[in-house]
Length: 324
Image (cartoon, rainbow, N blue to C red; front, side, top):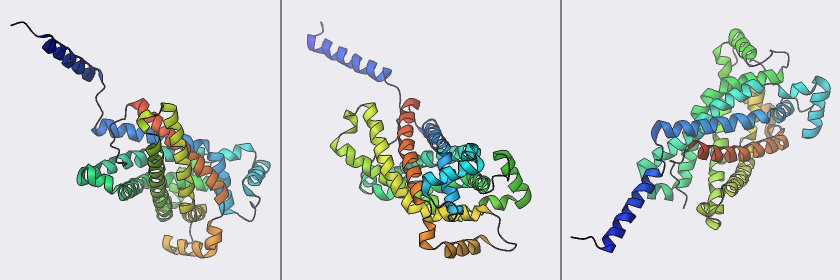
């Protein structure tokens, strides 16, 4: 029997669909997907934090010695350069880059991983309805593991900034702390770093997600060019960074203080934290907030912009979105 024109056309359409499906790249899953999320997160965090090392140096100096560095961000920059030279602004760049490479991998990769686990457990519809608690819980869980990796390197960075003659760099500073004070010294600030980073990351991700949702309701993501999506990520990240900086500033100041020097013999971490909190007060805990708003707003904006672009470049497009 001869084929009808309709059946011939149907076969051609089916073949075309099969060809398109075969040509389309398969979405990544499992380790292949989450390792790419982790790599994108590692690069975006290490690049942004590393680039802003000079700002971080000045912010830390203001927190540690507000009486000396009392002329704001620009004035404090000038004081550091005049007293120690421009090279002082790169103090701690090694531990900053290494620490935030590790932290970024766990933070962004972990956030995507835990978010997917909640979706799997709750189902897509329930997850979408309760997406704000999911954003908060996923970011908190991811940050906990990220801080385990970050804490020793952050302790080394702060010691190098607080005492410029302490060691010549990451390896020297890390080794000296380990030899003289033991491994516990690296985690003396673990409580403050959790107190700082977990609220910071929770506010960072939830504000970013909410601002992005609002923008994409008016300007659908599927209709945006790649460059406009990057601009959206920048803007959402900037607002998220301001929120995160305000929420986490008191703990950031305490972290700088506790890592400045080792504690007195027999003095526990909790005792030191209570002592520092009393000395600082609410106003003192916000020392350097102007510098930190600039720093965190800038780096968060660029982190989300770089992360979004790197995910596309790496083919990490298998994540599930639960925005309404």
